[in-house]
Length: 551
Image 1 (cartoon, helix red, strand yellow):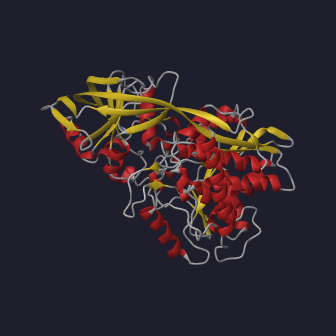
Image 2 (image 1 turned 90 degrees about the vertical axis):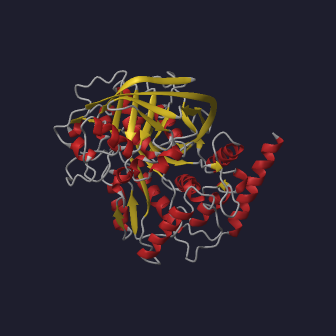
Image 3 (image 1 turned 180 degrees about the vertical axis):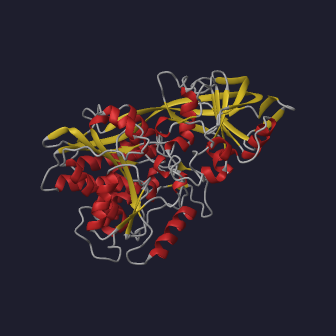
């Protein structure tokens, strides 16, 4: 207890020093409810080396959640989980060790694929070992069942005991037809997470995605690095036995060899997007063994609330993930602590600021406001997934999720970027505020990358809650478009998921305050309305929301 007490004292000291050392970012303070200096004071604490990169299950987690809880309490928030500011998030760490080779039998001649070079595989089943033994391979196109698009790659197909091979992304990507799915904008059906989920629902023994760089939006090295070594998952009552035994990826070159034997040649994507496409047996079988090492532990979400004055049973949710990558490979300067100042101390700092703004507002919100700082986003959006599947407040009474992740550190912008623009009515709230402030709104620069499915808001969208993720655009208010673009590129190239994502006293947090202020104003408006925002007609999340509301 003494060590923890001294740690918390040290953290508080850092906060005081940070608050005293702030500059005004070279501009006059505005009358916004959340100030840049306030945001920076929290980032200075959360991104300090003493928090060891805020990785779940470490001393850094203990310090981070203690600080956030204390700030929620200082802001006047009530504990959000039956008298506690914490929600336990039980997880399992699975280190999968596949066979060195994946054996493909049948066809013209047997093929041995090599681990990491040709394939990556893993299993989320909480067992010591899984095995595919001569499991027939079937090419199931994109591996999609999407009733609203009249699409079913599994129609008439029995895949029990078999392994499906599917393509990443969805049929609309680079099809030249903007009415096919959403054209070049990825739907959730295009995400690799969906492919694994659908194959499991269909009862397949294994599922293997064909990697292609452009539709995936990343190279093979990202796949191989991300899917080897230890991975965290939420524990499940069924120990993930409802998932496929084996999940994984193969390179495009390997896929072409397999498909050629079955008479499939040419543009794989064009073949699979044809309306006449039917799944094709590859006349080959796959054999593979995966040995798992299991380790169980518990992390924590942090949650605080403001009770609504007249409709306390309806909720506006603010989310930001508190975790980062911990201690890892040293950079050229010898720094090995991944502090995550922008990603995502900025978002946590912003929701603390929003919470304080609500408490200080003259008019109290009619609906309840919930502030949720979640764990293990960097491990696969796990903390938000746990809350969404174990909600403390019912999701069909949750009006919206307003998410903040990696806010821009390059100042205010004339444009506001809406992740996955075109999804739901919350975007109209952003547009209204942007118009009031003389701003414009823009969508994703690379819509085929599926950015809407890559942060915590997605887990709420997936279960029907209208979810919004916005950030600063690229046109700097003071320096112009070139400056904003350069700063975005500099961050992505030199600091994103690297030790260089550090706090600096001269960090420009005016853009962070700009986004926090917009989301505060949206939350204020939502909290005093009686209507529920919905999904746009062609959103893949509309049906589940309509069902939850009894429509």
